[in-house]
Amino acid sequence: MRAVRFHDHGGRDVLQVDDIETPEPAAGEVLVEVAAAGVNPVDTYFREGSYQPFAMPMIPGVDVAGTVAAVGADVEGFAAGDHVVGTGIGKDHYGGYAEFAAVPTDRLAVLSDDVDLVAAGGAGVAGVTAWRALVDHGGMQLGDTVLIHGGSGGVGHAAVQLAAASGARVIATAAPDYHDRVAELGADVVLDYDRDDLADAVVAAATGDGVDLTLDHRLDDYLQFDADVAAHGGRVVGIGENDPEVGFDLSSSARGKDLSLTMMSMFNTPDLSAPLRELAGQMGAGEFEIDVARTYDLDEAAEAHRAVMEDSVLGKLVITP
Image 1 (cartoon, rainbow, N blue to C red):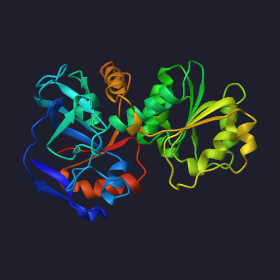
Image 2: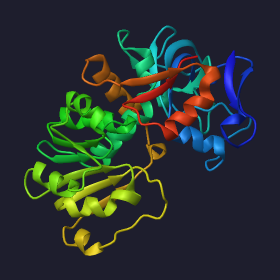
Image 3: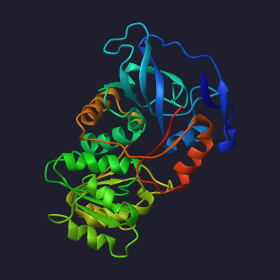
Image 4: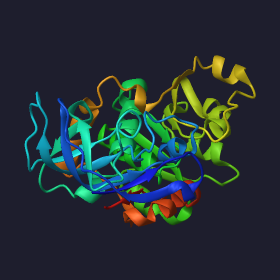
């Protein structure tokens, strides 16, 4: 099979397409013929070496979707021909930037046959991160006012849909070009993140005394902002930052509101198949979708890595082997 691999850590130029043996699924694994693999910033961290993969040379790609080609021993609930979506590979298993991937069943869910496999390829990290942040960590409830920073991004546009489906009042930030689409996905109010009066606009759009739950993908930029716009008893879930030095400028704003702050990583999910099954069910029912901004073939993986870190897009970038 053809697979993108890096033999050493480094820049995008270390990515190359190799012809290698198609893997055999081990016990508890299925072999997936890959239709698409989402491109995520974390894929670049493994390539650069800030995160360490389990082996070298390494096939990147945390996300995967496709068709089951074969099943290993002790596998239940999956059969050849099933359409599946998965995530959480590319760290301790070879990733999805390949024509085939051997994936543990605890990181997969079966999809209905009418779900677009290319879109599903970008669903894993985005959907599971959004689900874990809002539902498991954030305790999202009917009637909450939920603020989603970066509502047009991969996780952001997934979170807008999940929050809207829960009955929350959704406030999202995005570049003006994406406002209409973010509103179509379920946001009640979409605000330009560059406006000078953003905090005032968020509070004015909220019900009650402020935001009940905030999903923040850039804690270094927005943590103090999150505290300032929060309601009493507000919750903030942080999923990332550009600068590792994260802190409050004025902690009294947070303490005075009994603010709760949770920091999370999708890789800490105890059972990835559980949120994946929830998302698969919603995708099958037409209640959750992934916007695919661009597709790349295996030979274009380096360009996909550039784009995921540098370009502003709505939705996800995916590789289609």
